[in-house]
Amino acid sequence: MAQDAEASSLLELLHRASQRADSVFARNVGDSGLTPRQFAVLHAVSRANGLSQTNIMAATGIDRSSTADLVGRLVTSGCLQRRRTRRDGRVYAVRLTPRGWQMLAIGAPAAGAADHALLALVPEVQRSAFVKALKLVAVPLDRYLASKL
Image 1 (cartoon, rainbow, N blue to C red):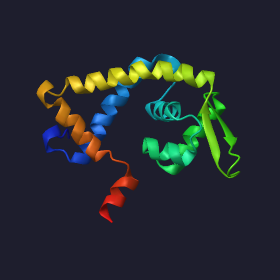
Image 2 (cartoon, rainbow, N blue to C red):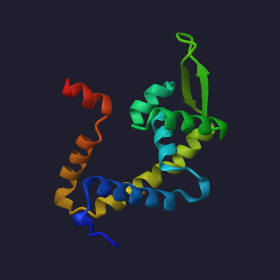
Image 3 (cartoon, helix red, strand yellow):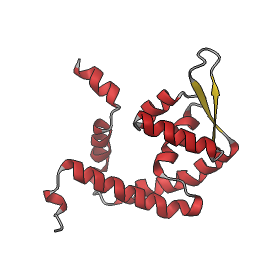
């Protein structure tokens, strides 16, 4: 039983949009095996090499256990390296490796293609408002909760 997109819940619409973005990303990333979530982690680390996993979680919006799993897999694949920090031996500083920079370079055009494909579906005069609305919805959870106190 197919449901009309207009009759869908907001949650379902956001999920469908995410699936479409992931599909476009996958088509454009080739056989590298890079996923959108892995790209999000690599991108976050590229903006601030030496992030902790907690900082990566905050920067990407990916939950704690998934972030730990993603970072672990990216370390195993040679894209990231983790080292204990001098200040706190319990905390890892995460950095991109040369392979990580290569994978980021593969993922960036795929992410751009997904952005372009999704925005192309929105009338040009509504694009700015659409992006602004998504930013409001995607505000990091900790900032959202802090604003409610």
